[in-house]
Image (cartoon, rainbow, N blue to C red; front, side, top):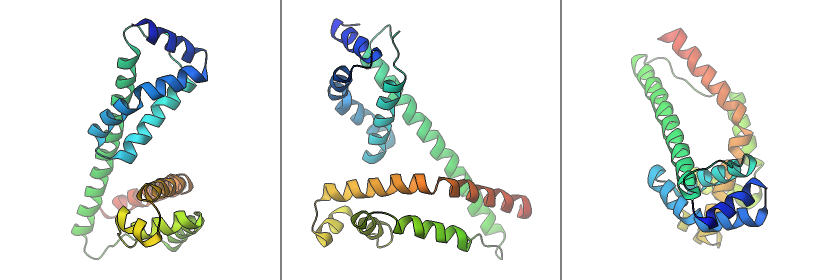
Length: 192
């Protein structure tokens, strides 16, 4: 390990903000490109990089023997692989659900009124511009540049607002996900 990396690592273990900022500035771009090549989504790549740096800040590892750079890339790769595995599992569940719906023409899984109400309420609780951008993106299917033109804001502002909306809705509707999974499982138990 290089002396500069050893100094950075020592600073990180001691929770030195300047060392952490230096590490972040030094490696963010290359880690981002690496993560994006795995998950093919800039927003998701940013999330993964943030999670890795947060994990490193909260649980600094002082016994890195090879290279700090290699360790960071290893952490990012593992997080990307974890995400891709979870997507594969979700895709399998979706496929099973579609198969079940095709098999039983008369049975249709729909969200109940309570679930729909929770989703609508969560969306309406978003800040004004965030809600407006999110609705144009999701419900109207507009692209980022189209939303930017319509609202007179920059395309990067649109991206930030969509990211914030998704993060907020993820947190607010986390319990709903468990509920929906339970409904799907119940459906399979009853009709498959």
